[in-house]
Image 1 (tube, rainbow, N blue to C red):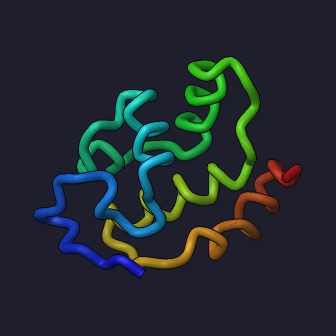
Image 2 (cartoon, rainbow, N blue to C red):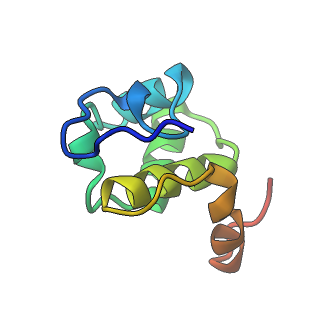
Length: 95
């Protein structure tokens, strides 16, 4: 798993769990630099992405957003599926 220096990373694609597609999705909702993830709300980003694309995205995208926000806020680099249970407990379980 990618584990860059969160203080110097400048490309979304260099973050854990982020590939080209999710990086593109993040840019679509105004996140163009890793630092913009600090303090971001995964659920809000997800809703913005659904609105921007005009379709409901897979709820697992929330898990990916949660994982990368967690990392940028000082947490360990964890696989995105580590956040699935937390999302499901919050009530967004389909998918």
